[in-house]
Amino acid sequence: MKTQLRHLIDDDVASLTAAANDRAISPSLRNGFPTPYTQSHAEYFITVASRKASDLVLAIIDSSTPTTILGIISLLRSKPADPTVLELGYWLNPRYWNQGIITRSIDQILHFKSPIIPTMFRAEALVSVTNIGSSKALIKNNFKRDALLRNHNEKDGERRSDCHLYSKTIDQNSPPDTAFVRGNFVHSKENGELEILMDHLMEIDLLSGCIVTFEPADVSTFSSLHYLYKSPTSSDFITPGFIDCHVHAPQYSFAGTATDRPLMGKEGWLESYTFPSERRLSDQNLATKTYSKVVKRLLREGTTTACYLATIHLNSSLILADQCEKFNQRALIGKVNMDQNSPPDYIETTEESLANTETFIKQIQGRDSFKNGNIFPVITPRFIPTCSKALLSGLGRLAKKYDTRVQSHISESVDEVAFVKSLGYEETDAEIFQNYGLLKNSIQAHGVWCSKDDLGLMKENNAGIACCPLSNVYFASGILDLNICEEVGVNVGLGTDVSGGYSPSMLNSQRTAVVTSRVSNFSKEKESIDYKKAFFLATLGSARTLHLEHLVGNFVIGKRFDAVCWSVEGGGGGVDVFDGDTPEDIVQKILTNGGREDIARVFVNGKDC
Ligand code: GUN
Ligand code: FE
Image (cartoon, rainbow, N blue to C red; front, side, top):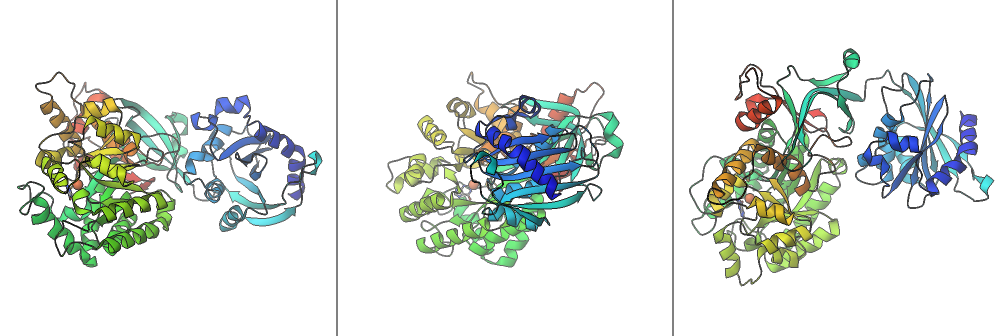
């Protein structure tokens, strides 16, 4: 084995390094790789060092210092079949490595297992002795250190750092690391457009939950595959999971009630129902009960990612993260901040608010679920009225220090805008957030009363709007003008705003978005949104708004498999299918008349929820 590697190094390292230097990928490879591989990546560069009859060698090269070879994977196949570089490419997709650190990429690569390599093979990695992170990752993955290769590339006169050789034998007969989903898929790639892909086969890496391959089903391969899910009939469809951009987890306990008040004021909705109800969640048992219910409910309704607001309590907010991990929901979670204009028994000091927020962020960012892209912290000034200037500026500093997302409510209703003015501000909500460093990368609920300039400022700051059509009807005295948002180019996603919005269903949110858009455009010449646009907003639009487009939102290779499997056959739910219904008719029926009874399965990260 050592001889084999020496041979490989002597023969190939020089050419490999040269290839890295001019960043050339051989034309055949370039053609073979799907789009992501043809781009030059910020941090890593992949090339093929050797494609002999008996082996396939891939090197991972740090593109910032292209002469540093971080690792070589040599796949010595027991059967000399033509290596399908394309499939290997999927496994080496840098999009997997979304955290951008080499230990993670090595980790991912070491779990490489593909049906194209028939039985046993040996995986090798050559790692610079100074690359401690990669060495640790290898050892964690049961690689053994075989040899120290000193100054291995003396030929060209340049000294390179010494390397360790690690290796391990991988048995393809051990339980599979990938599984398949077969069915009719529907997703959006652009605003307002549905792509319907009938009878397709998708391969999913069970470890990462990433989509590995996705193509029309080929009858010859069916029987031998390990399936995660197979659509029972041709009238069933698989959509990306819905992404709720704005939902108050503690308020789920009174969803469907308390619909009789305006937002603000002594007798208003916040003071009468919301603050007392949120305050009770200082009780951690109650928080556990409430949060397990809301997470399970949202998953049942097909929401695979939620951007949650919790309460002001640190420990209960962490419990919400625990529940999302437990029930396998992807989530952005914010501990709410309020240090003024709040009831005496539901308020924090500025110092407490900042200290607990920092602890919350550090706690979440330390979790594996954060590193895996499942759970994220969000800085959450409730809205401008409840946050002092000292708090806003402290939160702006934390957002910068920890590079986190921010969420809040922005120009939500006429009474909220008036309240902000009464506090002495001359700026709009968007300008205030901007002044305190809280607009950048933020997710802002409502925005019904944002001016076109405000929307432009949001776009400049990569901020997006969580449009909450149902609660807008109750609180905003208006609806968000999606035409203007589109014109300005600001990202928009959909939210339920439970419980200002009474329904936890993102289907309801989509339908309300369509209905309110139509009503608001009755007397105008403007175009209203239809079910396709609403579906886009609830999936890819929301993914963009939450800055999660690299992970979710549609079915693209390298993204996670977060999906809802709809099964309408038999009419037990809200949809009846008739002869002559086209695939698009059925999809429209599901999105317009379907409900939770039509959901057969929900997946997050390739795992059943
Ligand atoms: N504005 C400030 N807090 C809230 C809330 O909890 N719900 C809604 N809809 N608007 C808010
Ligand atoms: Fe809200």
